[in-house]
Each structure stands twice: as structure tokens, then as C-alpha cells.
Image (cartoon, rainbow, N blue to C red; front, side):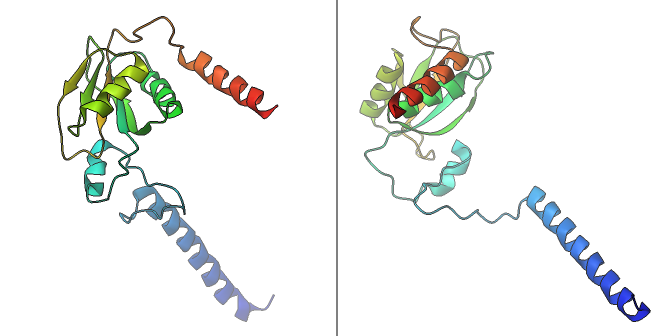
Length: 173
């Protein structure tokens, strides 16, 4: 290769490497701009606090939006209950952890007691309290306490996952 081509090729390779490194760093930091939503997919907030920025969006009155919080030391509880609620037709917009609680409760967050009672009935939780928070973009909060599960009929995470998989396989036949 001729010496006159080496310098431009070296500069081009360095620029490409710098662009790649800059892209990697920018993706790790986050640009601050919202990610584009896929067509036909409802954007879901990452947390109830982030949902406050979505408060001006017009909610679908037919869907009951729920957050599920694990107030026990048992890992994966909120995730398994999220699956149960989604299977029952509820829109779980967030699941995570909460400070320790002795008993499970469903909180009415939007002044829609009927929605909170529907969630409580789907899970077998007897306690429903009204604690409206107009800043949250949801109708109910489920707090899973130390008394969860309310009955012996509730499956644990691994069994629930296996039941879903075998259920899907049976439906495909």
C-alpha cells in the first residue's frame, strides 16, 4: 500500500472507533429523550412516579391499571401476581417492592372503588382501602403483605410458570 493512503485510512479508522465508543457511552447514559414507541404498543411508565408525566394522556376507561408491590422478603412475589392479574385482564403498569407490611391490601388510587374491589376479588384479598393519589396514572395499588397468599390455591412462581407453558402447549393442539 502506498504511503499516501495510510494516513487517511488511519484517520478514518480512528473516527469510526471514536463514533462507536461515543455511541456506546451515549446509550449507557441515556440521552434523556423518550424512546419511540412501537406502532400499536401502549407506552408504559417504568414506575408510578414516571407515570405522573403521562397524566395528561386520555386513559381507557375499560382497562383497570394496577401496580403490584411486594411488601414481604420473598423474592419474585410481585412478578408472579403481576402475571395472574394480566391473565385476568388487568393492565399492570408497574411491579416492585414496598416496605414490610403484615397484611395484604388493595388501595383505591383514583376514587373508583369498583375497580379496586375487582382487583381484590381477582386475588382473593379482603382488605380494600381508599387512598386516592391523582398524581398516579392507575386505579389500584396491590400491596402483598406477610399474609400472602390468602389461600392455599395460589401457586408459587415456578409452578405458575410451568402451568402457563403447559397451558400454551395444550391450546396449540
